[in-house]
Length: 187
Length: 165
Ligand SMILES: [Cu+2]
Image (cartoon, rainbow over all chains, first blue to last red; front, side, top):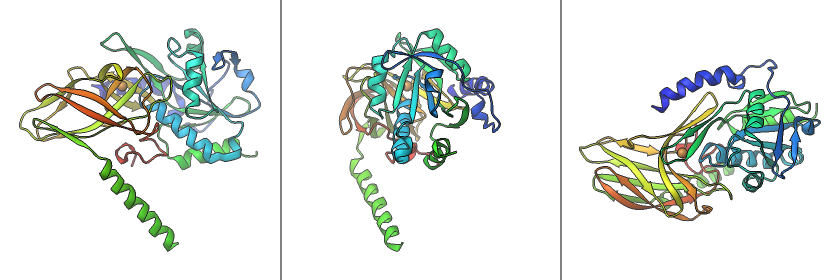
């Protein structure tokens, strides 16, 4: 049941999400955005220029993929040591209805203070998902609740805000670490 | 070098023993429920997932149809999958089928009982009480052992089953 659905969504996602196709040449992923940081302040892509960064789409009511991915990121940041002192990982909520700035701050800091929650209006979230070719969709559950399907890839972006690489869900830690070292290391 | 290998082997052995010691299980009717576990949650997170193995030693198919827990507003039975980098999650309508003679595992990346609207944070080392309801075997109270927040992920060795080969 889920498998058939996964196939259908996968097809859709492949079209929208180039990184999963492991494309080596530069692809237009990333770009302008306007959001609200976990501190409740406006933040745009221009604010991130000058330093490489990582970006992840998720939501705090994600039971499995988001917390394990962020726990993985926290371990990677530790293993990078001083190299990652100024590195930031942005956790963009695909559930802005529930994920307020304050809630995201509390949530992301539980993993590592360098993981920064970003939220916004539904339009702002749709806009950043579009430039990052990320997929997300709200799915109602039977008891009046809902959950979110979403791209669970970590995007690595260079100091000019250009797409550099991705880290897939549960990618081997050493491979992920090598990608981060390449991103953060001296030119 | 040899010392390192021996030390590593000893570590592996020690963690295996710890794993056995930590395992707990339940029986209801023809069903055996092995080591229900969950993860510690981040503050602010309003959901959690419960995992376990369910073995049906009987001759009839049973189904895990519902659950409840004092720590959750409500509990749903879910299935998730990762496809092309997208996580999708759905409620399992009609519950999870446990065929006669089969063992079904609820594990990260697949079936789970989902604790919705958590009333508080789940802390590592806690035992989260919950009730599982099966179509034929009936209801049983179990305890979910709360492991660390990222248990089952790439850097942690919480559960072998959760790791990719
Ligand atoms: Cu779920």
